[in-house]
Amino acid sequence: MKSENTQPAVLQRLNGKSVVLFDGVCNLCNGAVDFIIRRDTKHKFMFASLQSEAGQELLDFYGLPKDSYESMVLLKGGKLYQKSTAALEIAADLPGGWSLLRIFKGVPAPLRNAVYSFIATNRYRFFGQKETCRLPTPNERARFLG
Image (cartoon, rainbow, N blue to C red; front, side, top):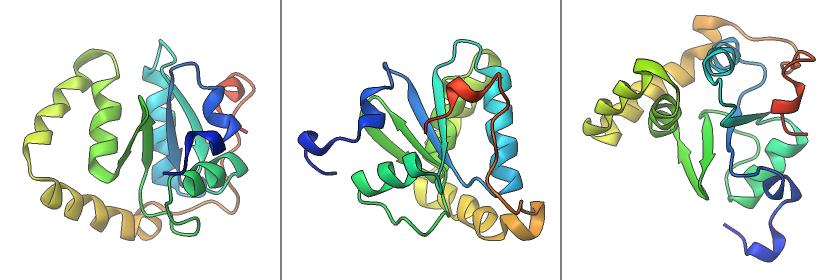
């Protein structure tokens, strides 16, 4: 991570909210974003596609590859989470029984991430992809960065 002096302006606008970075052309990833939005009644999460200007700026800031979209990324409380850990952290912040999924944190991360990586590597084949990145609806627009 780069120094605080070079912190992207997008991070300064979060007001304590977490950011989910996702592959904007992936049908599975867009479905996950829709799932989170429907359940996130307290608006704890903001969103940006990995391909967007905001997403690219955040990837650069955190020293992550800007051309490989194999993982959903969560920025929460100044920490960066990837792969299965990001998914479990997101679930933990959703209302209802979704927080019970945190029990899977007891499974060693290499095992969890092997399953995650298999799905991520095959997500276009299994779930398809869009020609362009997801565009938020007018009601969702305030929850997307950029």
